[in-house]
Amino acid sequence: MPRPSRNVSRRAARTPPPVPTRRSVARWVVAAAAGAGAYVVLHLAFYLTRPETAAETPLWQPIVEVVGSIIVTALLATRTGLVPQQAGTTLATATAIAARRETHEALRDMRLLFEIAQGVSSTIELPELLERITALVRTNLTLREFVVLLFDPEHQFLQVRAAFGFADDQRLQNMIFHVGEGVSGEVARSGKMLYVRDTRKEPRFLYYRGELQADGALVSIPLWYKNEVLGVVNFGRAGVGSFPQKEIRLLNLIANQVALAIANARLYMQTRELAVRDELTGLYNRRHFQEVLQIEWKRAVRFHRALSVLMIDVDHFKAYNDTFGHLHGDQVLRHLSEVLRRNLREVDTVARFGGEEFIVLLPDTDRAGALHVGEKLRRLIELERFPVPQEGAVRPLTISAGLAVHPDDAQHIEDLIDHADIALYEAKDTGRNRVVAYPARSDAPTSATETRGPRLVS
View (tube, rainbow, N blue to C red):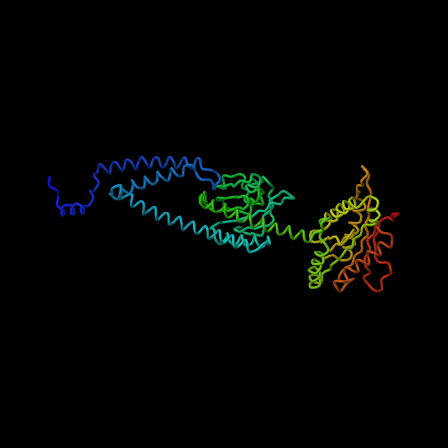
């Protein structure tokens, strides 16, 4: 049989591929229709069985991607008249474009995470840290509102510490939600993320006690650190279901960064507190008291405000220690310190000055007010009963206090404590269990102003 000539072979190579017939196109259409039906069913199954946690990989995702690729290939063949091989080439190009788009989105997300990590690592002061987190989220994410709530382990509630997107962001500051209350409280209780696709259909959503007027979608994520929930962060946006799964995964990563930064800030605060606290009583130490006194003195001088100091000493405490031992004496000092702490204002500063001596700084308090505070503390301590090592036995204790006031008693900061100390010695010399004020005038009588309880036999 004769071989075809070389020219015939070249002409055959240049011949374009045959155009698909109607029958072949019909077969592709049928295949596309069947594949589209399967695609819809699989997508429906995916949404019905999708995991609540965005970090988990959906079970149906690989199947959906494969079927989707087949359908795209079929549709390209039927719409463009390409044979399957050519449609596959076009699909590869489309897949490459999609891959580049996903790579671009991934790089954008990585850049955002890097910026947040860099921003939150530049400070360890908690208030400044929360401000920076809020600013970074506001700039880089298209959100309607954003709220950070921190957990207070002592009082067992969540407290709003940072927010934006409200008519008055400041009104949200320090708003409290108990564990289990509302969406945020439930997330703190369970430790699991909650995605509310439509706030209108979520009865637990409290609209931040009426501060938020609009509906939409909410992603509430717990701030986990070493098996402990530090708080909750809420991301809000207008529109039902307006957070896609990819973005929810990104928000989880952001929440992890925020949790780590808050944990570091709290550790720093605890370390700093240890440096300014008295180890035995938990009150501030003498050094920290001096620092606070410097600040309050400058403020009092600048704004012409009164500033008072109470110097307190436990009566006959040496005899108490000698009788019952120093370990029990330490328990008494801790008990007494708690009474002082509970019965002073938040703006007041109480510190252990040394041994059984305590000192209280009372901003914006004149002589009459300081005498009232001193007398209240004296009565409370006198009525308190301190247990002794013998079972069932209790013993009363009393205190003596001396006070001095700026500007009446001291024009220099050093004189304020010295004059309060002089008044304290007078209280002890005149019978103890009393409050004595330093003489305000040079022509005052020798005995200072005083209030006293009943004279105790020592």
